[in-house]
Amino acid sequence: MQVNVLQDKVAAGEAAAKQAAQSLQRVLATSNTARIIAATGASQLDFLESLTSLPGIDWGRVEMFHLDEYIGIPVTHNASFRKYLMERFIQKTGIKRYHLLDGERDPHEVIRKIGGELKSHPVDIAFVGIGENGHLAFNDPPADFETEEPYIIVELDEACRRQQVTEGWFSSMPEVPSKAISMSVKHILKTDEIIAIVPGARKSLAVKACLEGEISAMAPASILRTHPNTTAYLDTESASLLTETTLRSV
Image (tube, rainbow, N blue to C red; front, side, top):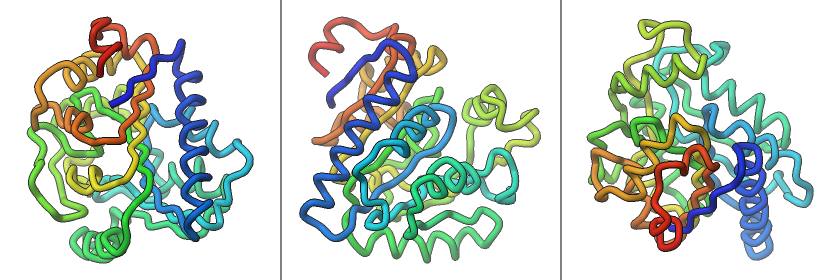
């Protein structure tokens, strides 16, 4: 894993967006379509703002898959990841081919349909974050590192649900759904390139655990260190607990 530490979250988002744009252009130079996985949440705001403003990307040839979504909330809800992606990514780029996870429908049917599309061809690039509890997508600890299913139904732990309240997506814990659809860990790792954007002081403990601790289901994003082409973009706050040795060698 390559780790880049930028001065602040805006700079981290801009640097990650520059790499993402270059990677997309490289794929599109030799392929008719680039397939991507898009993450959501507060950590991705600056990244998506920068990426959608960069020139030279033929978004009409990009196909997007949705990383995760709550079960049971409407697309009109402030916390809906479908709403988030429509407003902050799809509408800004004009991307036409996208697969959003509908948390209001039967989740098993959603998983069957979109999972089948996801498995049909390799995915080129995944944009991901790391949760305060170390989760990757909505794979909270202890994460399932073994399932081959592209999407799974997961129970959200207390730390994950608390983060959603802290970030302002919900006003109280009882409002946060207890279940979600999440892309599986193994399927995220099948992507050719992974770009992780992880800014903010609240992520510093998770970043340390995932980059310096053992690779473990209890720190789900630690598994990213096994992927041959992963780049992490941190800011000085999220990287504040890392050792100099890690920053030089990871």
